[in-house]
Image (cartoon, rainbow, N blue to C red; front, side, top):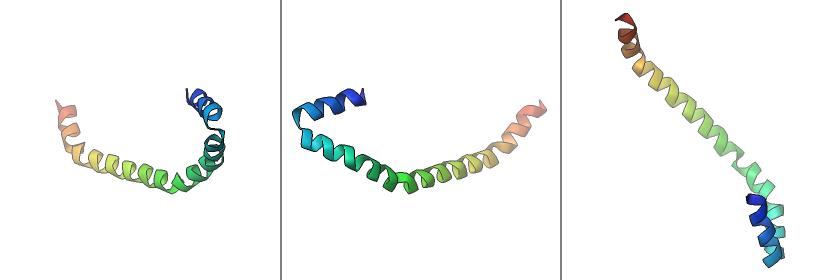
Length: 63
């Protein structure tokens, strides 16, 4: 679907499409640190959630 939208943009406004084609990899590279931070934060939140819910899990297994 993204490819077809890009083709429509290329047909109607080719300078903007070429600019988007050139800037997309640059923006993708600039966003990598934010993705890594998001993965790390998600991992920490999962760890904290597991630690908090561990006693309840132990009580459930004991039944």
